[in-house]
Length: 600
Image (tube, rainbow, N blue to C red; front, side, top):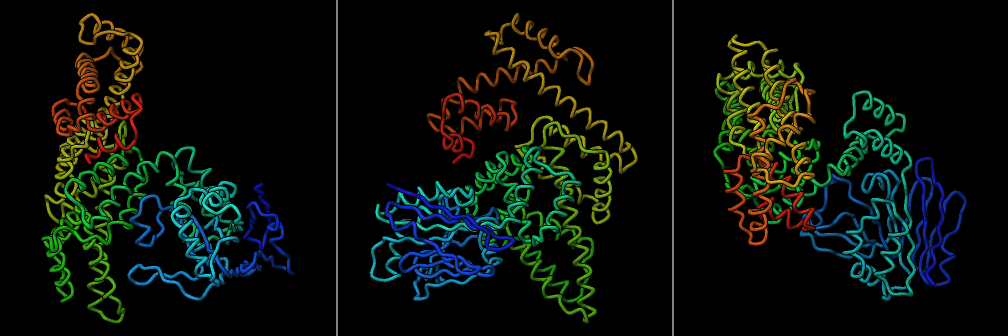
């Protein structure tokens, strides 16, 4: 009969312990002893001692903790599917080539701050096993690794602090006469911060300034270091159900790129698709940027020395010699950075960072001059990033209307970049955006009005408020269209009819006017032109679901999907929504849908 014995206590003001001894053997109920202010857990040949200051582990066994989102993973774990935990065995080390080596040192001494910084900030596990066969500790460790290594690195329970399921899963991989001794250490202050962050973020997927201030005050009160705050914050944001699906699909794509050592043109397109989808679904940008840093920073680009990298190197060398960069050179540098980021080429950022590090002598006046100009250029980089984000939100987000202050900020930045080069603002923010296939019909209208409106306001032919009103009108039209399309779909579900029949169209038109009434911003009956667009989209949806999509899925005709997208007039993500509904209604697995939408 399997039994589990548990012991819970607090070793100091910040750390709790949860100990479990589990197995089918009788003797394991003698597994701990209290010694002054310490507690000792033991089995023949193994022991784990907790004092108020340190933890000591000897014998066979090791540690297990869940990776936090954004943690720097070992290269082997980074490129393996499904690895979610850090596993460390006593006596095991990894050589520079990534090969496992064993030593005779089977003891570890750690203070608690080290445990929670190097491992999970909230929960960390320590374990040893009695009953495995082996003539030495190394043989026992090798047996443990062979039996449990792959499983332990992929179990979800460590991050969830689910001791019972973790014990059950581990014992299922061991001989029946083995006993598992498992100890979980929990940092109570970090757990409190994590729980409060969830309570603030999860209901609305955002946190107002007042909430952020309250969270900062809590972190100060609990004495949580900034590094741990950031790790917990990032992980909580990732684990929201509306965020992790996008992040996981992006991670899978980047994992493929990292494994093959380069990014192909098709993968570039898929990266753009997922980042655009993340923007539309308001997934925090930091989640994808973190994955970029982890997976792409070390990749060798397909082109050894692209022109934009050569340009950057030459301009930085000019700065080194004390020659200031004029507006023409700054224009070249900004465009080079844009190209580097477009191709996910981290050599540009690395070159800038290395150049900064060389300017370290505060007594060198020439170095100070160069540093000042580089700082000004880096501020332009930051302005470029924030402007890109603002424009992308206007263009890609459904029903998004920016505050009028954002329009004024864009005008200021348009003038700032215009002073460097008259055509620079358009080249940085509009030229490539116009080519994107992921912009919807209303987004493209907003893009056109924004570009022309900024030019008109700068030239004095339009006021900023009038540009804002134009964007407001288009956003209202967009919302009215989507509400009407949804109502039309609902009407068709309850009225089985042929949408191509004139009488059915007339009935639908009257039903929509009756249901939507005049409660829209236009305060009038449904515009006939908009109604024709509704009919067109409904017909195209029907054609795609019943004629194109089954053929595309069953015969892998990806070109047919691309042809439909090019000629149907439907937005790209409208088509993806249709595909997701079709996959759900026809019980298609997630892999099939992903292959379809990722063109793999």
